[in-house]
Image 1 (tube, helix red, strand yellow):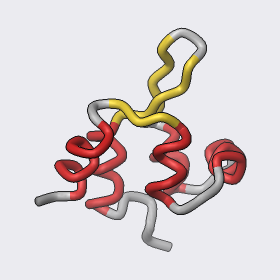
Image 2: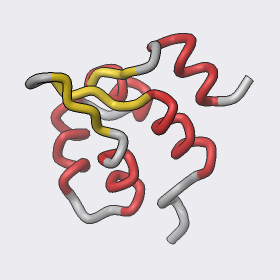
Image 3: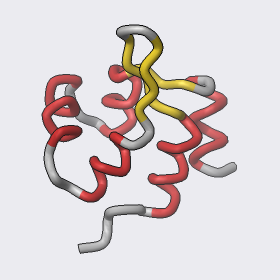
Image 4: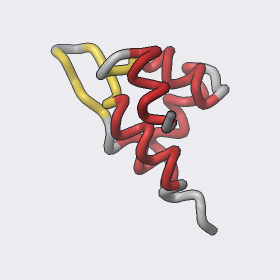
Amino acid sequence: MSISDFLINKYGPLMTLDELAQVLKRSEDGLRVCLVKKNKFYSAIAGARVHLGRRLHFSTTAVGSILENGKGMEQ
């Protein structure tokens, strides 16, 4: 089972900020700060954002793909 499959089974097609923070083992506020910084990994995560009205969600498939491929993890 891939990371994407696991995340989709647990969270569905979209993850909330709180759920993403739990996956990345960060606080919600810490994650918010990281999403605006110039970091390759968090820029890739920020690219998975989906706004539904005023609510912020993240594409579970995109987050899983980023985690599987280590996109932005190289130095």
